[in-house]
Amino acid sequence: MKMRITAALMMTASLGLMAAGAAAQTEVDTHVMAAQTAAGTDFAGTLSVLCIQPSDGTDPGVAQRAANAGKPRPIPARDTWYAEPAQVFDNVYWLGTKFHSSWAIKTSAGIILIDTMFNYAVEDEIVGGLKKLGLNPADIKYVIISHAHGDHDQGAKLLQDRYGARIIMAPPDWDATMKATNMTGGIPKRDMDAGDGQKLTLGDTTITIIQTPGHTLGTLSYLIPIKDKGKTLTAAYSGGMGFNFPRSPERFDTYIASAEKMRLAAKAAGASIVFSNHSMYDHAWTRSRVARKAGEESPFVIGAEAVDRYFTVLRECAVAGKLQLKK
Ligand SMILES: [Zn+2]
Image 1 (cartoon, rainbow, N blue to C red):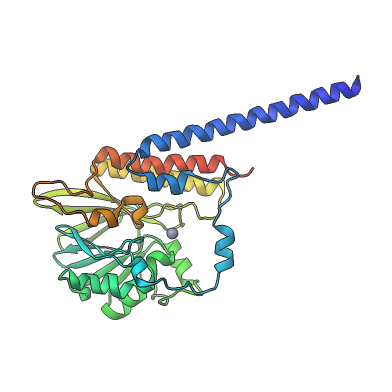
Image 2 (image 1 turned 120 degrees about the vertical axis):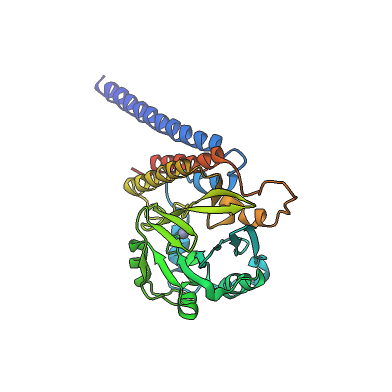
């Protein structure tokens, strides 16, 4: 009898656990579904990177990054990454590879450049790309780094050394850069700190810098004024997406707060364009190649409602990611 009671109690307890597990999974599913609805077909790449997670909440890249730590990254063959540069708005030039993006904002007093990509792409895509488009790389006055990862910051030193460009990063990512041991392209001299809400003005153009920690502790996003055939538009630049960070509930909370902060900032600014630093998130490489007919809207203009959905995908996938963390 006693044994039976124990067995019954154990059974009840395990059923209870199963019910709790099922409830937790239902909550995860609710947020994944919300992200899916928000993504639609516009942000399928963002959804697949952020929401399709291993169910135990681990970062699948950890082992690979540990195995590669300290080893120089092999340089891929040029034809696997090289993309033609393109002017995408009156004042915006896309200088990306097939995977990563660098953006040049032309002002009345020089160029503001966003991100410098892997070192191997700097000469061909940024220096060469600006020249191909009739611009002078020596006119780069500011380089803002969305976050201190190699695919976005390796070219910073070259632009600082050769053209005297001022480099801007958030303090936590400067700290990480200064401690880097194997930064291909070299470590730039520590330069300007990016503040939250800071207005960076060059000539006739003011970019608003918004700190959006999460992907790294110093990830930056921006609101960028766009000139398009007489119209003034706003682009919301989203600066760091993947969950390849030390995973904790607190870190996910930071990420979630930043996604929501940027969603609201984009909404308040009436942003109708999303730019990012990987083409899988914003289709920049594809969109840069679309031939625009007279009177046709730029393929980059997706509308305020879609911009809102983009940041909703980030937020909802991060909530689902947090819920899937191992307890
Ligand atoms: Zn990154």
